[in-house]
Every structure is written in structure tokens, then in C-alpha cells.
Image 1 (cartoon, rainbow, N blue to C red):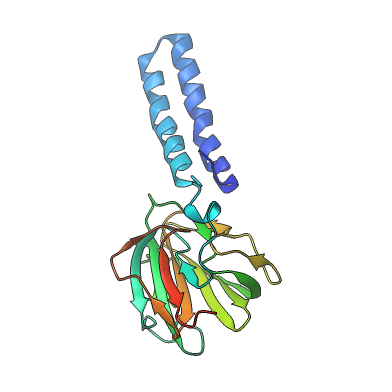
Image 2 (image 1 turned 90 degrees about the vertical axis):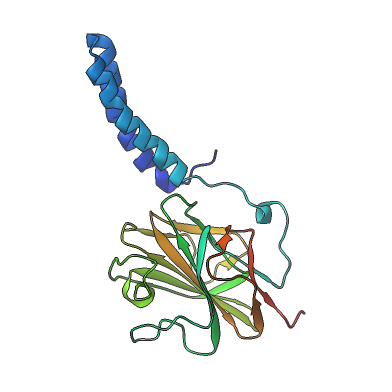
Length: 225
């Protein structure tokens, strides 16, 4: 199983005390020391599962050129009109449709590009750490935003951290070209991703639907080239 490089400190950290307790328990014959190793071993196992990075269909089969894929695993929170909340309006300026995906602490947290093209804008903003499923998190929480352009088509997407997530990893920047479904970062622990597509796209998912990063088609351009 592939592990994202950002996960190794979280995996090896608990393994060190687990090994020490296990070794001390074997040397002394004390069962209590051996048992003390288990919580650390279980934590390391969970971290390995959290930072897992499985291959998806987009890794072996190029997506259709008009398809916008889910950038992450999770449950759809918003599908259609941009989410309204406390000002300022969380959607970018202009006419957009919004798809938001909430990632729980058991979902794969590797993030993928929802579409292909060149990163023409990139921004990072510090902020709060509200629960990612709350509407206010879209404009109050720490986030990273990317604008992707291919010809006359533009997609904007955001990584937004939640109450547990305290670190955004974005492995791309302005001038970089991304393929649809390409790995571009991750968020550590519970979080959400917002994708904004133009109104000439058809949104194909619904609120409450589970989606898979790099596989589920969340929107499609209707003006096929």
C-alpha cells in the first residue's frame, strides 16, 4: 500500500514507543509493558490507513476531456448553487456552480486536480479551524485556493481545513500544468474541498452522495469541443 510521504512522521512517531514497550516487556517478562505497546501500535496503524494513497481509475485510464472529477473521497455537502453564508460570499467572483466534498477522518485524504490545465492563480490564507461541515468554514477557515485554466475553461478549487486538520499540503503552483485526477496535495485529518465550475457545466452529483477522488464525475461541460 502506497503511503503519502507526509504521513511517515505520524506513523514512525507512535512506532518508537511501541517498540520500546514491547522490547522492555520481553526483557522483563512483564505483560503490562507488552500491553502498553498496543495503543501506540494501533495509532501507527491508523495513521498508515489515514495517509494511504491508492491508485484510482484516472491513473490508468485518461478521463474524458469534458469531465470534472471529484478531487477527494467523501460526502457531497453542496451541489449546484454556491453556498450562501455569512458575508463575504465564499464563492469566487462571477457566475459559478459549487460542489463541496466533506472528508471524514477515515477517508483517503490525498487530493487530486478536478480538471486539467495550467494553474494561473494560487493563494493561501490563514484562518480559523471550524468543523469543515459548517457553512462558515468556507470563508473563515484556513484554506488554499487554485485557479485552473484550459483555453476558455476555468475551474477553481479549494482545500479547506477543519477542526482537526491543521496543515494543508499543496504540491503545485502558478505555471504548473495538471492533468485531470493528478495528485496535487493533501489535508491532514478532517477537512473539505470546494470545486467551482461555470454555469455551462452540468453538475452530476447530489447532496449526501459518496464520491471517490479521481473517479467520480461531479460535473461535465455541455459545450463539448
